[in-house]
Length: 206
Image (cartoon, rainbow, N blue to C red; front, side):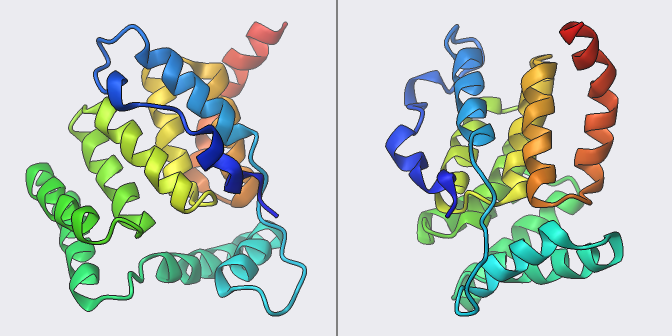
């Protein structure tokens, strides 16, 4: 059972802290980080569990070569909205991000989140678009929604860590990157970030 499933009962209220100029914004990011780092990965114990849960368990135990295959399978599961039209909006948003057309990406992904609010991947990708546009408040709001819908989405957790790094909150960013590794031990970006921050965090501990 994943403790993250309780996140709705402890959700950080972000409506009034969307601007990074708000003095409460940094503390809100920190509080959200605490919630995320308290979450445990899903533990698959029964054969009749969902494909996603089984893939997550296999990913946590896989070697590097197996992890690449499992990551592709997991992303395929997460990218299925159940609607061809919504899948197309997701693709358009991703394609726009790939060519740095951030305004178009936000437009496509806003249409997606408006029409499919229960589809976590739409919120995750729009958070990435907002972060790229330096809109950290809206990005955090979208990450909160994404993780309430899918607590094990390591892409969303990675986005939170990136926001923490932007605020030079190395210790919490380090912990959140470790949360990514708990789910996906071979995640290259998380591993690089942990190595990058390790000396700074360990130095503070000393």
